[in-house]
Length: 114
Length: 112
Image (cartoon, rainbow over all chains, first blue to last red; front, side, top):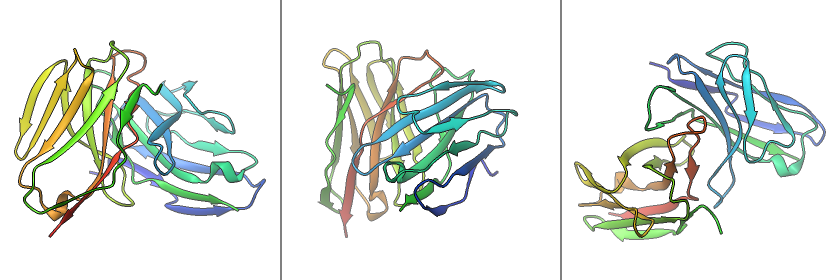
């Protein structure tokens, strides 16, 4: 039972480079989310999706883009990486039919921009 | 003012102690209250959730919600070294794309 899988686990980028963080879930969840976690700052929502073809901005979307072409996959794109994007990125998903909104998280991607 | 406030700690207690972790919030529309546990270099995992006010117990863990005071707590009895982790409170109003607002997390260390 894989749950939410994120790749890569670690990445170092140079300023101005681009990359895509991959996220896939095998629970047939409609809702998927991308968060970033900075030390002592908790989880900040970057983007979310309520189903294939539908995405929306969260609290901190600047510098990121997403797409949702399938129920399973929700990649996060970083264009023109900046040091401020150094963080740990988590993908999560939930079953939209559950009122309690329990989210299931991947293991995270640690990104450093130097 | 942040929507959810949580003392970041770190909190260090001896094995076997009772631990109390707390959060306050400002949005009276929150109905669902959750505690996530996050081990070092891992993703958060749901520990407990509570709907509206009241208590919920699961083994050594008890979650309390006081909506009148906008205050939630997590109690850990007979704490074990394996409970050492960061604990994040989280809450939702049950609408708006199932979005959850997280606290900043409290880092807990249980000394053997």
